[in-house]
Each structure stands twice: as C-alpha cells, then as structure tokens.
Figure 1 (tube, rainbow, N blue to C red):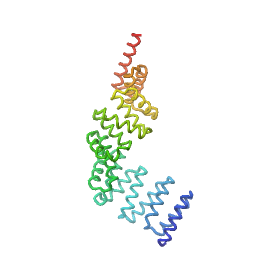
Figure 2 (cartoon, rainbow, N blue to C red):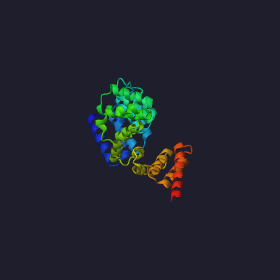
Figure 3 (tube, helix red, strand yellow):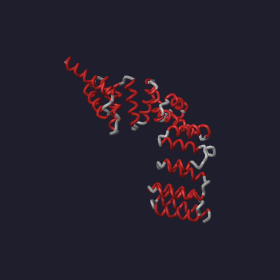
Figure 4 (cartoon, one colour):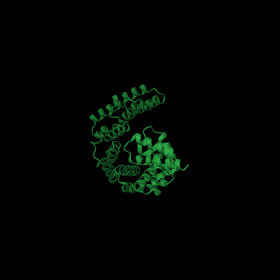
Length: 300
C-alpha cells in the first residue's frame, strides 16, 4: 500500500467514524496496519477508537505488540504511557516509561511525576517533577510541574515550600480557580487567615461548583470571624457530599455557636460525635453549647 492509498484509507476511516460506523472504521484501520505495520498513525487512531468504544485492553495489547517488535520507538512508547495514564493504569504506564531515560527525553520525568502523584506516592512524584524542572524545556509543562510540586508540598505538610512554588507561577495561574484555592489553603495552614480570604473568594467566583472550595471557604471565613458566611459555605459543602468528615460538622457547629444559634450548634456537634466519638473539639463544643442553652433558658 503506497502513501496515497494509506492517506485515502485514513480519510475513509475518519469519515466512517464521523458517521458512527465504528466497527467498519476498526476494519479499515486494521487493514492499514496489516499491510503497513510500521505506519504508527494508524495505531494511534485505532487506539483512540478502541478507547471511545470502551475497549481499553485490545488497544493496549495492540500497541504493546508493536513495541515488542519496535522497542526503540520512543514516540509510540510515550503515546502508550499517556494512553495508560488516561485510563488510570498507573503501574503499567510506569513500566512502559522505564525503558526511556529521562536524560534522553525530559518529558518522561513529568509523566512519571504525574503517575506517582496520582498514586499518592508524593516523594517519588516530587523527585521526578523537580528533575523535569531542571531539564525540561516546554514552558507550559514547566509551569504545570511547578503547580504539581506545590500540591505535593501541601500534601507533605511543607506549606512554606508550597508557597514558594505558587508565588513562582502567580502571573500564569492567577485567574485559575485551583491556584487560588491552593494558595488560600497554604495561607490558612501558615496561620495567615486574612491573606487566605481574598484568594478563596476568588476561587469561589471562578468555580462555584467545586465543593472543595466551599469547604475551605467555610474554614477560612470561620477563622476570620465571618460566621454566617462560614455556615453557608459548610452547608453547601455538606449538601453536595454524603461522606463528610467529623471535623467539618465540628467547625459548622462552631460557626453556629459563635452566631448564637445554640440548638443548631448542639445538633451539629452531636453529628460530629456520631461520626467520631473521640472528637475532642466536638465533645468540648457540645458541653459549651449545652451550658449556653441552659443559661439562656434560666435567663428567660
């Protein structure tokens, strides 16, 4: 099959895909591969088609078979690693990437960093992202690596380190909701509650549907003495998720307590204790709420 015939068949396959004739499309791509086993674009197109059909394993097997015959083809190896990561097959992706030295292809360090980050193997992820920051040259990916290192440092409890990386990319990500959320989380954990207020409000305005923003907005409003706003944000967060941690109910109760909503505070402290009977703050808060309710009743 010559180049013109390949181009014709690739165009035909694309048209069949547009028409929804996916099985016919698979047949065309397979005919190209059978007659031209070195033509990698057909593998990529067929892999994406299998993915659209939900047939991940046949796509992986097909590309692995190509790599067994052409182990030095970095382009296909990188494609397969991205395909595997896109489908949450992290360990398989790591194994595929291990055949390429990061010194040869710095982007490998980025992919390994991302894969280990998604597996919550933060120390290894950080090493790979830092390696990419030293040797990579794609500006957009470099800034994304900075963002991932900041996330990792937050997860590892290094909030000063995270702040440095977030400040480094401020001009790039200042209108990105997650950057604003992350820096507000960092300021909160550094005890800089006033500094945390503006970015978390911006995160809310940029993405009101992201419930983690509601949670952190509630926590930050509470620390800044804006109890009504804290209560509203916690309630939005709770309504969107059935598996809420005991600490959130404790903080919601604290916001109600500060707003002199004693019955509500007591009810939320009790929910917090059902979720975690050993929650010391909820135990003390419940005692405080009961005491204030009794005092209010006595004064009435």
